[in-house]
Amino acid sequence: MCIWAWKDGSGGVEVMAKYLYGASVQGIQDFIFATNKLQEIVGASEIVKNIANAFSENYKPDEVLINTAGNIKAIFNDEKDCQKVVLEFSKMISQMAYGITLSQTVIKIGEKHTKEDIDNLVENLKIQRNKPSIPLDSSTNIMKLNPSTSRPKVNQDEDMATSQKLTSYKKIEKDERYKELKDISNNKNKIAVIHIDGNGLGKLIPKLKEICGLELSEFSIKLNEATQEAFNFAKENKRVRDIILGGDDVTVICNADDALSFTQAFLKDFEKNTKEIGALTACAGIAYCNEKYPFHYAVDLAEALCGVAKNHSNREHSCLMFHNIQSSNYQSWDKFIADELTIKNDTQTIRCDFGAYYLNKEDEANIEDLMNTVGAYRCENSPISRLRDWLSELYKSDKNAQNLLNRINAITKQNNNWNCEIMDKNLKFFDKNLSNDTLIIDKDGHIKTPIYDILQILSTTEAK
Image: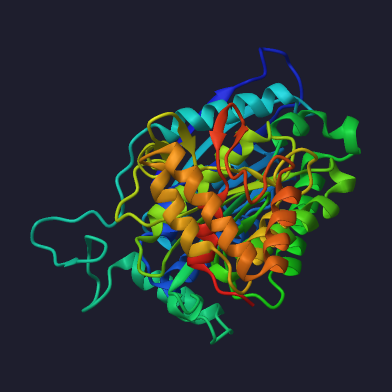
């Protein structure tokens, strides 16, 4: 479905006119994550990636500013060449990916594009995205529908979009290890959906020339390369499948056991790879879930957690947030905090969302220390089951919970003094105010404990 607008941005000045073209793809997430079948997800991802290829192979703009799967900006010197794209490209995309809508806009510019031109283009695209569109596979009451997608069938089992996804998967998939989500999940049937997004691009792009001496088109290419290299580095020896990988936007499915180490490695390598193009950082959200959990909910949560991490770091440092989905439905992260992550007893209100967890920031909980602390609680004679009882007791009485914690520490020290010391030291590395005796501290304006997060990781993963 074509949605487009034409706007004269020249301000009435007689100059050699050029045409700044912009396209934005809508419905990518719904298109990719409409199913829990990995082959369809991977096939849909490949179709989305091919949108960028379809533009570059069929049209020859005079300058490409950016061309990723969901975002295209290019400059045409010739008006007819630009009109050809507007008339043809949306039809091409609608037919190759049923369920996706392409919004387009064009503004007339002078000899060189300016920041104001880009801002106008982005604003016009926002307007176009708000206009309704009619999908090509709209159904009527006489059509048979695919029960899993509610779209009209084109053969005995599939609707058009599903057929396109499976055809795409068969063309590109060489790795026979990961055909279904169960091939990626761990022995507890747990996977992790990870969403990663770069920080501060909105502030960096207007100053690209000044900061790193690059045009937008050069920066876009180098950013793509940095992201791809970071993914290749982080995925080594891990069960992980990329779904969206372009620009600074990453979504992957990962074995739950590998999620923290993958994310840490990606963030570290991404920072290293972008030192020469603005020294970028990134934030991540990890949603742990069962392999059969509705996938689009896990993706929504991973994106929400990424946003929470960004806000916590003020979009300046690399960090992550995570959550293990245990309830049957997902509404919002705030709902999880209210229903599952807040303990109210007779004297205190305690929050269990201890993060964000940083790649490397002083006076903040770091990812490495989180993993080491989890490892310490995997030790033999660990009191982890008794700490679950401690969390339950916290809901009833702060005093009784403290008495229980004292007994837990006395028993643990008696059974294995060496392990007790390891856990205590790791907690102090994790946060200087934590110890075996002090598991509740003031943090981020709330009273918080990290034990719930530690229990989450232990319950969803296995030791390597």
